[in-house]
Amino acid sequence: MFGTNQRRLLVYLLISVSVGSVLGAALTMLELYLSRFGGAWLTFFLTATAVAVVVFVGIIGLKVAPEAEHSRALQSHLILEIANETLPHLRKGLSFESASPVARIILDRSDAAAVAITNLSTVLGFAGVGSGHHRVGSPIITKATKNVIRENELEILQSQPDIGCPDADCPLKSAIVVPLDIRGKVAGTLKFYYDHPDKPTESRIALAEGLARLLSTQLELSEIDRQRELTSQAELKALQAQINPHFLFNSLNTIAMFTRTSPKEARRLLLQFADFFRKSLEWRGNLVPLGQELDYINSYLALEKARFGDRLQVFEDVDAAAIECRVPALSIQPLVENAVKHGLALDGRLTVEINAKLTGDELEISIKDNGRGISGEELDKVLVFGYGRGGGIGLSNVNERLKGLYGEECALTIDSTPGNGTVVRFRVPTTKEKANA
Image 1 (cartoon, rainbow, N blue to C red):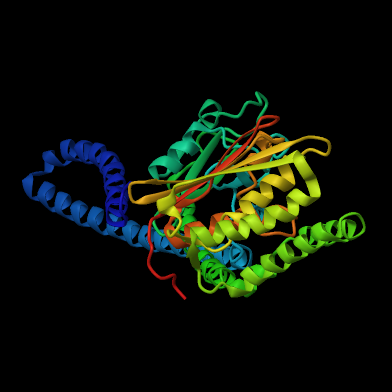
Image 2: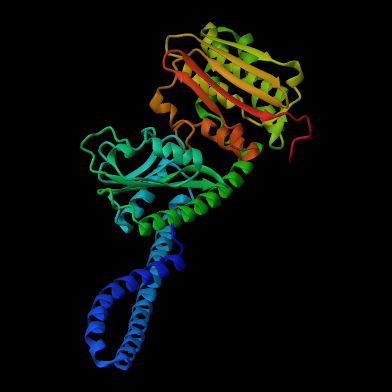
């Protein structure tokens, strides 16, 4: 890319060459003619002509410079206007809810044929031509987009094969793909599509880069807001409010059923139910010992086993040395609850395995079940912040808290095959220090 001064110099040079070519031919003819009148006339004429050329080129240069400055000013104004309109949406973070209206705003304000926004794996928003087959929620298929995410560098696509659209009749012929980053790490991409291979010009590339920088700043601010909110949610009172109400009602119904058939069992379950909430009330701070989290899980499972009987089997494999290691409060129990809630078929059985292993200076946690599994389409969405309609502490909540406390490298990973079960894993640094208040 040329800088401002280099571009201006290039304009002057092109003007000078063009003017010089025309005048050079004219001067050659005049030189032959004036040579018959003597050297004095020839010297005077050449000097006057040279002065005129310099003045002419200077006037052209003075005219070009303000026009270039005016063009840049208009572009900057456009970027700021788009950023201002998208701010209310991006304050919600990079999600399905925010990406679609942002893509529409950018499309309406630019000359692109279509605009798309993705996270690291999924198309979150799309507006413009081609929306019939460039579907929101579909996985990223463009090799160039994956390269942008991996390398954190802009890419320009100038042919339909480069775009990689499987629809042979797709009208999109070129694209500019720019990374969106949060705190220096790629979080997604902003994509400008055009209907002609020559559309990715220098000015359009500059617009895409400038807008991506501002959108990244907005996303970073939203991330700060959300992490602050999630930190407060890690406190017990905020987390308690998210305990699945269906579990609460089902537990009470199960206890009520046993009061008629087995009062002794009903009393035991009522004590387990009280213990479940008592442990919640006693927790303080973001981190708790793994043993305390497991006790909480066992209280929850005692109620679920009473409800499902031998249809639900749970096994624990936990390193003894890991019991005192600190983990985020309510980080494992929601994963177990999710396995029971979504893995157990109406008339089937379910086995859940809870594993905690020390590997070097990290504690690896995994929750494995042999239940219904998750479809590929659903798997791309379950960790998107705000996805899902359950009343409990969802996977996205746990995932965001882990990333906020330890970084992206400690986020949840999910492997699942429909009909063969699911494994959810995460890892945290080992610490036995007092939990933060």
